[in-house]
Image (cartoon, rainbow, N blue to C red):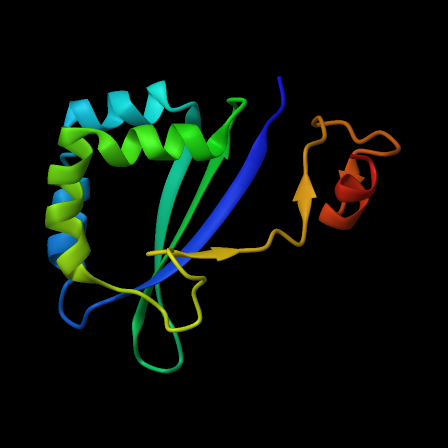
Length: 134
């Protein structure tokens, strides 16, 4: 199984952290089922107020499917997910620096460690090394 990791960032609108946390304390099970059907696992969202005084959300997940674009399209077409996004999107403020068509701005992975508890030679790779192996 091939696992790819993905990371994203978006701003949270001022004063919306409590509402965002409240929503995520009770995610619709249909949304979680869609995430699973779309081959996404280990999905996390982190919050941090940066030195510009603004709140940011950082998300990461692992993708274990074979066609990320198709799975993301399937997710976007899901009615429960669309309802969920109708609640979360007004709380978010996309970055100007995002790529065309993105809501959350994709981040580039610069380090990954997939090693066991006891390190072995070759367990630590950089994304550049991984790309050179493709």
